[in-house]
View 1 (spheres, rainbow over the protein chains, first blue to last red):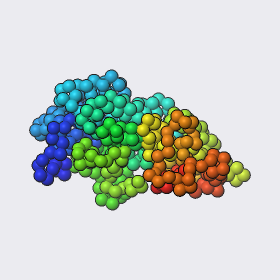
View 2 (view 1 turned 135 degrees about the vertical axis):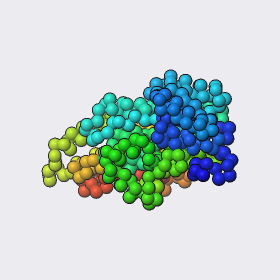
View 3 (view 1 turned 90 degrees about the horizontal axis):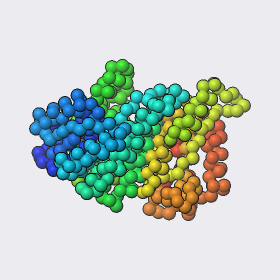
View 4 (view 1 turned 30 degrees about the vertical axis):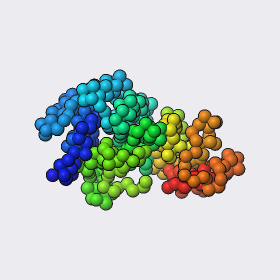
Length: 261
Length: 138
């Protein structure tokens, strides 16, 4: 049995609907898979059908409820269309997870360009705002949950990727403020800060093998997490009723590497 | 946040000029933010988003620049930075230990002096909370 499935076989998210941006691969697909295995109908929102549609087909082949919708999170109209089609086709929206990110802006601060920051901010902070405001009425109707993907880098800063860390921290600050604002509406807002073996991380490790060694050495649990079985259960928790009194928080899922909160 | 990045880049250009020399001492970049960045506040999500982003920028810059330029953040009561339309103090269930948010001249300015002083350079990248004992974090 996978760690992302319930020991009792009962789904913690039976009847729930979740929309996951950047859901076609990596962390997003891992979270969606875990939620679907717990009974949720998941909608994978991504720019490319070759990954998103294929991922949804893969989940359906497993007997899970999954579909794909095209969504470029830098275009508010596409977010609105994704949210609306989810709510119309599946009847509700219980959880929106904003995971998509174009984090290609790397390097020292002095070399950062306005264009690089604009792309990073558009897919992280700005898209968080657009996802939130567009999903608000649907999440309020269900007493739902908004989850943003952040990073420990946002809490400890990054020498190699200072603007990435800044954007991830801003999303966390956004979540804390929104949790305070949306509590009276019955909507919870939380963050997940994962380290997991995704295709992107695997590529980075191939480029720099010491990165993998450093990540493993840092984590007391001694390994890099799995998107489905290590990070996914936290999404299941934050999307479901077990976390009904949890809001404004960041759950770091990295094997204990970052313990600074 | 764009302005904060611009400030950091400008300072980074100074860092690139090399060691400032013994007379001027190490460079220091200090941001002053509201404690709203730490906990968020209803109606002011932009303040907490920008604040947390700048705190991470201060950490990243500190890691990148090392001893060439150190950084610090001073977090103060939002009532000192905004007029009546700004976010409220929301640090703790209890009132501030010192009774209030403090005074800019008598309470906060001296801490800016402290953080701007090169002698405090070994505290780099961190946030000092100066709100009269409301947050007491971390």
